[in-house]
Picture 1 (cartoon, rainbow, N blue to C red):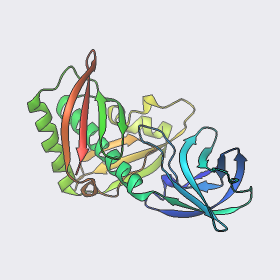
Picture 2: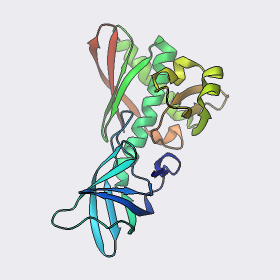
Picture 3: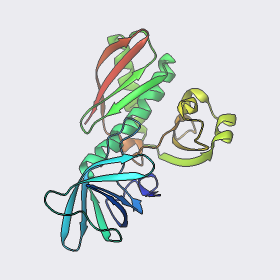
Length: 242
C-alpha cells in the first residue's frame, strides 16, 4: 500500500520512492507526494526520473492504492525495484491548494451567513465553484460573501490538519461543519482540516483529504464572480483568486 505523503508533506515538491508494481503505463510507488483526483481537487502532474530517464506523470488515481499513469511513448516504464525521483508541477499543485483552502472558507461563510450547507465543489488551477443548499443568492448576498471571505483571508490565520478517531469526532464536533455523514461507514479515522481565528473562533473544521496552504493569507484575494441555480433549493457560487 502506497504511503500517502501528500497528506502530511503538502509543501514537498520533490521526493524519492521505489517502484512496487508496473501495469502497462501505470506504476505504483511505495510512497508518493502526487495527489490523486478526489474531493473536487484534480490530480497532480509532474515527472518521474531515474537513471537518466524521464517519464511524464499525466494522471494519478486512487483505488486500492495510488496509480500513476505515465506518458511512456516508445520507451518502457521504470522496472519494479527502481528508485525514482518524483517532481511535482508545483504551480498547478499550489493553485489547487489555494483554491481548496478558499473553498473551505467559502463553505464556512455560507454556513455562517445563510445556514447554507455545502453539497459539492470542483476546483481548477484558475477558477472554482461550490454548490450549496440555498434557494437563490442576490447580488447583495454575493457581495456580503466576498467581503467576509476577504476579511478571513486578511486575518492570515493558520490552516491545520490532523487525524481523529471517527467515533470521537462524531461525538464532539459540529456535524454541520465536519460533514462526517458524507463519509463511507468503512472510514474509522478522519482527517480534519481546521481554520481558527486569532480569538479562538473556529471558522471551519471539516473532514477533508485534500491539500491546503499553511495560512489563510496564502489564499490571496477572493473574487466571487457569479452564481447559477442548479436545481430546487441549490445554488452554485463561482469564484477566482488573484
